[in-house]
Amino acid sequence: MKKTFLIIFIMTFVFTSIAWSLKIGGKVLPDKMKAGDNELTINGAGLRKKVIIKVYACALYLMEKESDAKSIIEADKPIAVKMHFIYKAVAPEKLIEAWNTGFGKSDISNLQEEIKTFNSYFTKDALKDEVYDIIYVPEVGTSVYMNNELKGTIPGIEFRKAVYSIWLGEQTELPKLKKAMLGM
Image (cartoon, rainbow, N blue to C red):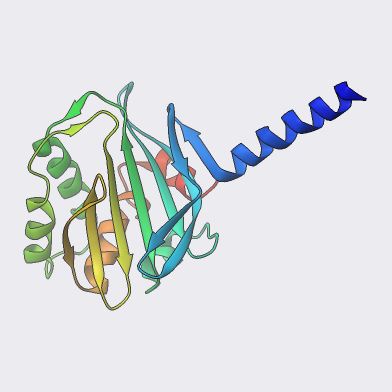
């Protein structure tokens, strides 16, 4: 009887722990996050790798589960991407280069000022265990947080589409991560 109780207790603890977070690349990503007054749920998560180096654990958060990348990009709904850095240090120039490669896969001719502002937020190395959040709230814009500190907000749905296309766009440089973020 005691053995049965202990097994049930352990299984409950294990399944409860799984429900509250997801572990990717040794980093724990919560299953919920706030976007303004909205509570978002993790849609999927994966690793951003450069060759064989794990750069960051990354999760996509939405109001409700969705696997259609185009619908996610086009919707004027709250969305967030959480990046939990694994590598010892990623230089801001490397992040900006990656962002610009991703932006280059979208029609961004009218977003040059917004992209310049976005890139200006990345001024120091992203260190191991730091967490960056990119959160969009309708009628507010796309906000960049580094370790829970707001760096700035860029208004507009067109910029939202461009920034989330970095991970979810048809021509993304990150197809494996895209698939994982879509929960596939």
